[in-house]
Amino acid sequence: MRAYQDMVFTTAARLTGRDAQAEDIAQEVFIRAYEHFEQLRTSASAGGWLKTVARNLSLNYLTRDRRRWRSFSELPGADEEQAPEPQIPVPDTHLSDIALEERRLLIEEALSRLPERQRLSLVLYHFEELPYGEIAAQLRVPLATVKSDIHRARQALLKQLQARGICADALEV
Image (tube, rainbow, N blue to C red; front, side, top):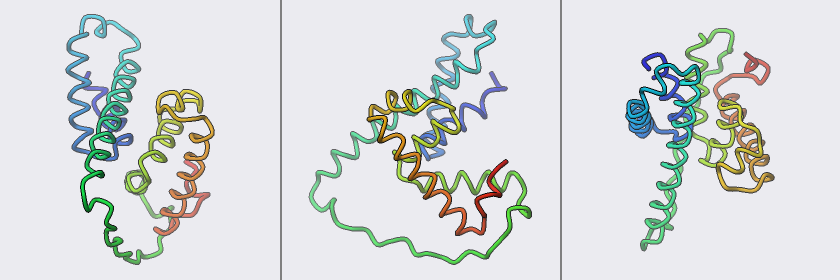
């Protein structure tokens, strides 16, 4: 099971966008794995099972979190605007100078800044390799919404990465 801990955590972190929640979800995944240890011990598909459980628990967490925040947003004063984050200029760099790990961190950071629905659709499509129809079913949204969210997420991600000095063709790995 140790061989899968990074994959489980990364799956949860990409979907939730929060490391603390990803740690909780990963812990829950491995508790469930322990409960099913006899079946998983000899299974060739243990990694797939763990990844599916991590994905499902992450989506469940986000659904509960969304409901929780919806009730908070109904409190008085919740509709007041927050001050925008100050934009700090970043020096221009070239991707060829960035190590693979640094590139991964830049992409993870840019993903975390995307709106939740866009991030989820993009992560499920590119990292979890789910087809559009399955993403729509998982997120309970229309297929057209998934396609548009993925398109918008790609555009926003590209814009963020270009602001960090990374050009589009350099993202092909």
